[in-house]
Length: 260
Ligand code: CTP
Ligand code: MG
Image (cartoon, rainbow, N blue to C red; front, side, top):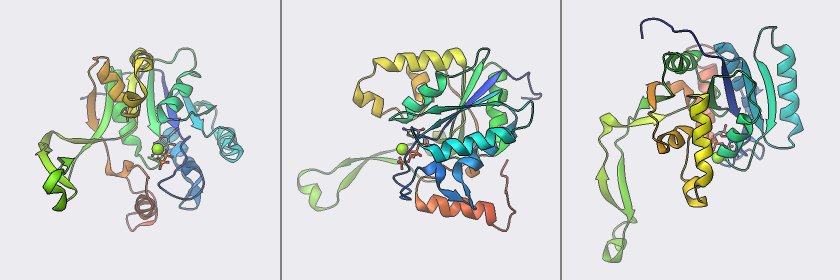
């Protein structure tokens, strides 16, 4: 795209209601310290710094007073003209937390970016690429990066093969076509509403297989476009990811290394 089209009136739904089981800190992931501050503070700062949103809806673990206070304090520090910060209780699943955010969107919102608080170091440039594609007319857009590993499909071994190894390779995916998908994922409001409405018809097993919002949009037959993501947008999931994120903040490349 040669020039930036006029941005749509945009909300960010920041989902931060997960429990952080795999990180194993015994507290919600959003509260886990990163560079001396809670992960959620980094995530909120990144969203606001991008300047793309009129509203930020934060989904928090229900009843977590500490995280609620953090958001309220953050709201007080927002400059005049900054986004409206709306706090909402998240749900049992990530999709439930997204729906809780959808339920509190302000009148006049035209586009929504759904973002994982766990991707706390996402560069502003990624928000801009997603917002620009929406402004240019895409109904749905996701940030994605090429996959560096070769990816294979496998099945559990059976019969005599199970004495050899637990799994057998069934195929190799063409790597040049594969992308690792990140957030923020952007949608025209009508597209996101339609996708989440349709998801009500899914049974429990189908719902569990839905790992991002774009998948719901694909299911209703709407085209999803991809823009360049960033390795800096890593999803902090395991203790190793937290070490990497600490390294990004404190490493020799500066306090906030920005991969464009
Ligand atoms: N999330 C949410 N509500 C849930 C589950 C997840 O808002 N019920 C959010 C998380 O807070 C996170 C994002 O969705 O920002 C991606 O989820 P994940 O990385 O799996 O975080 P957790 O669910 O907290 O981690 P774990 O699965 O290890 O418990
Ligand atoms: Mg989870």
